[in-house]
Length: 307
Image 1 (cartoon, rainbow, N blue to C red):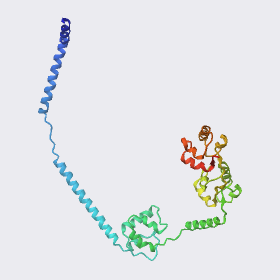
Image 2: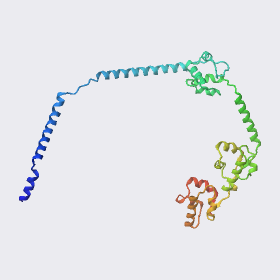
Image 3: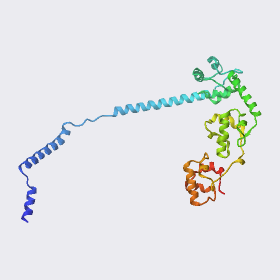
């Protein structure tokens, strides 16, 4: 018991060095508290008057509302004024490079005329009367008053283009359409846009597929672009009766892999499933377990069977 009391006494007793430290700490605390108390009273914070600034802001807001109302009224007046405009166009005129004075003489608003002239100055032109509707400010009412008097002659380039199109249409009518699943490479050469390279590609890809199921498959050919594809499609058609189907229950691994729509991993998955089942009862089973995606199944289904 006496030992415990001695321990308590030793815990709460200080040596000379500790007593000095505690004394200094107390003095610092007292000084900090005194400064914190008296400093705000010696240097009081300033009070700002915002009334002048608020009054100025309110004045600017009032002016902004006044300006906005004035602009809206001006626009409304302009719209009403333009709605009542009656144009007096000449019996026929070409709006391209039409003189400003003549635009104004027919009653066209000057703001619209300036827009037309700026459009032409930047290289714009009117190919047909409907192009006038592109002009900002030339509303439907003004356009309807003009459209029956606009006469834009065809340019030499337009005439040449029409001649080329006419010849192309005439030639197209004379060329016999070919069945894409039966035509040989020599017959395909008769079609404009199909040379020896593409004729060979069409036949070669047809053999790999087992026949085309749609003309859009020609877009899968090597180096076939959309412009050429759309040019040759009018000369072609297909019949799906010649499609060669692959029996997924008897096909060899390398033969299925040779088909353009089956890569190695897909072919491997099909054979693993066939080994597991022993035999496919229908092609639809390839959709199970994610062997084929919906989109791939749609592509390959015409080429498969399960006998």
